[in-house]
Length: 219
Image 1 (cartoon, helix red, strand yellow):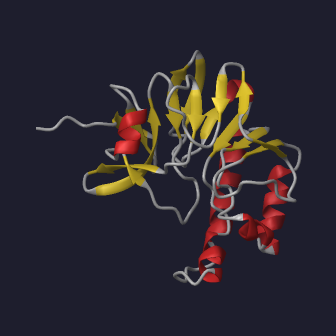
Image 2 (tube, helix red, strand yellow):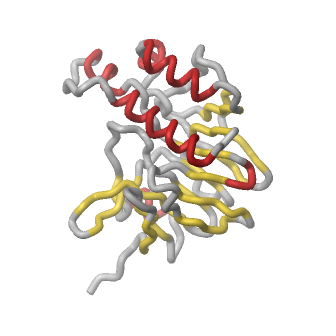
Image 3 (tube, helix red, strand yellow):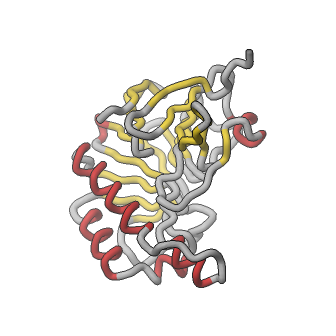
């Protein structure tokens, strides 16, 4: 799968090149910030017009990850829809694809700042979720330990190119945005610098998951 395996709070996890996190021992796939329906939301609010294929592209990538990993449990770490109306306006093809992916799986929607309430789409809805000593939530909390979150859409520069990335230190994992139409916050942003400890890694997504220092040494 060209993923990056690491130990976090005593558990073996894998950062996948797609931006998903896989916990093999639990058969669990975790993704964050799908932002389904973003092109519809932009058009509805008078923003820029984008090709309306982002949701299907995102769900297709998720389908591939589920096929490769065989995961029977899925956690979506918030901002799964670009807003509540985008969830309601999801097209029939997108809705049917999502229903197919959810069928036969335990599916948890963790609430984010873009999707503050439950949607009529199945699965269970949580403000946060604890599994053993790991807590899954949308946005990192500064004093938490063993935390897996999203929200910030981290990205790192490599050879002049910006790539979405995971951030990893001893206390937390921050996932990249999984959605097709999503921006990002560079790793040197003050918000991320304050959260991540010394020696934190950025695990870049792409054709393979590539670890590098979050804070590269300056020559």
